[in-house]
Length: 382
Image 1 (spheres, rainbow, N blue to C red):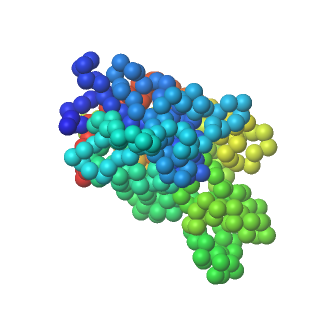
Image 2 (cartoon, rainbow, N blue to C red):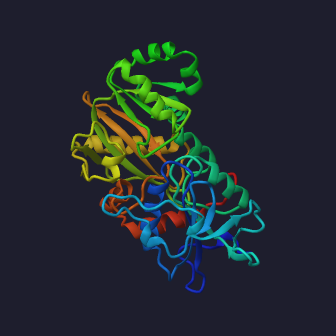
């Protein structure tokens, strides 16, 4: 059995790094995860990496997704088809650190072991993948992986816990209240009273979802019930945030290798047009109604400040590998952390790779760096 610590992305030419690229998943961000995977699979150098594409269907089935990378893209404004049992042979991974293997199961055939996996690139967004669940499986299996560990993945996915930890670390966050579905069902009047303190308009969000799924902008109390019902489709835990008036600015963060400090990219500003009230799913992915200023037009001191805050947020939540930190620059000049994303969108047109390209790290180099960083750190407690 190979020692994953001894393998690196710069290994000798006769030792390829076996990378399991895991994508899809059970969350509402399934399709976006597939798009991310399609882009990454195209840049992994076959001379350096032996790539094993593993798709997870919406019902949780793991499949060997060979030969479908061309389907993993947004085409003419349409998302790729969802993965299912027809997408490939069934694949399993045992939570056994003495056998870091993927096993393929085909009907009527003896199970086939693909061999040890040196590193996993988990390109899953949302619950059941980005939230510490997959990371826990990989820790049990003893397999290094790209990105944050169990704790930081879980708390970063939960907007309520994330904000509490950021605030406890002295980082600025906006006003919000947390509402659980049971609380709304039991006493909606109390929820209305709590939300009224924020002042309208407010944003109602699933606490543990991404890609703007289930988010509504609510202008008046009579719209609150419908927004809560829309959000709880994705999560029984909700956050309701007071509106922050200002500019939306994002920063990418990369962990250092061999103990080096994390680095922040140049910031980018998101500008939404075309009748969208906020940066919603369609504006992000489908209809081309988003403009980006890259780098963001900021004063030099503001650029330095937002990069510093991004690294502080990364460290406060004990992130690893990569993260995108989203801010508001308020009208009074203050930065407020909106959220942190431990597995941001990763297509060439996604903000995270774009910001790093503008900082001097190209797309393929960025993927290589993430794999190298993952291989340089052990699985388990660290």
